[in-house]
Image 1 (tube, rainbow, N blue to C red):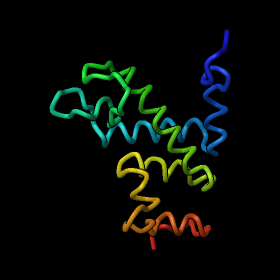
Image 2: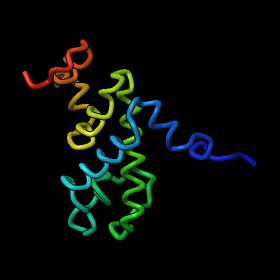
Image 3: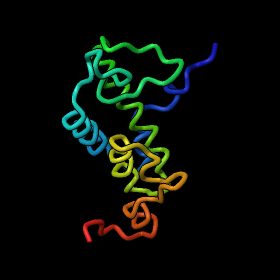
Image 4: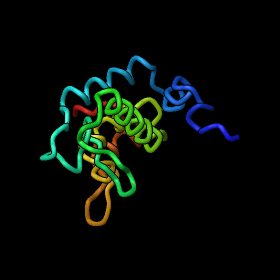
Length: 130
């Protein structure tokens, strides 16, 4: 019998791997929940929970519980943190922003250039306000 991957690595290991404390991760989750809002009606389809876009092969409906929505949000945010893990302690910042606008708005694709924010963070400049 094989053990699923998510039980082999506890939550704290995942968070430590993206260089964010559990408190910051939880704060990021609450921030997304506050500004994304709950997508529990059919008019929000294909978005469910707190902004998760239902992908081909997933069988979510708009009637998922808030606990399921929270779990999906945390999983999505962890994936994005891993995607931006090369940014070290700024990976959570990039993950939350990309959850809202999409990762390829930050990373760039096709004719869309890489965002100035991501260029600054990659160069080591953490003063993102100027």
